[in-house]
Length: 207
Image (cartoon, rainbow, N blue to C red; front, side):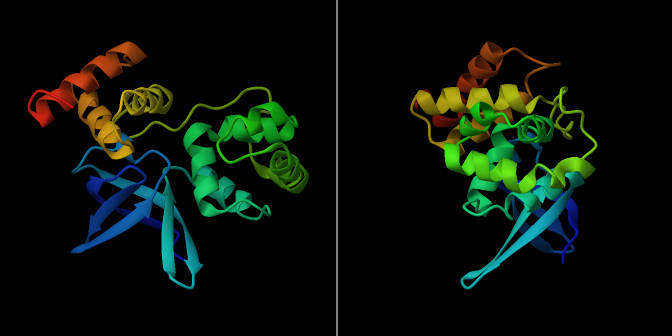
């Protein structure tokens, strides 16, 4: 099993990042690939998924996030795509707290999770999450990334651009480029305004 992949970010797509190391580019599916700048050296803790058509590598900036992803895949009805989406929309602390607290309302707000699946997640994982050292009443924020931005604001900015007509790849790239022009922890409206400016410049004046 590949425990982690470490190298330089070559480029990123809407749901993956390509890590260059030793002349090889490793394509790793990731919850928030737009958070890493090209050229930065990162380490992603990985979980390989092997199927008849091939194998796919999923990677996370923290081991605990990777371990939670692995546990989610043990639940009937949760595949890699849904598991990745869960960790894109919720931090490890939020998801673990919801399972420990049997918060079906929170879980069913996550894409791809209905009431029956939420109940199954709680039933299958509640006892297994005792080893996760995260207080149930205090969700933990998403890990700090090399770019140093809050994933929540970036994700909301991407969703806002998608609502305006951009596809997910275009929105992710615009937000990623906007990060380079912003200082500190910008508000959502600053993210969107800067991302729109970046997108307009790249398209030559229009969408």
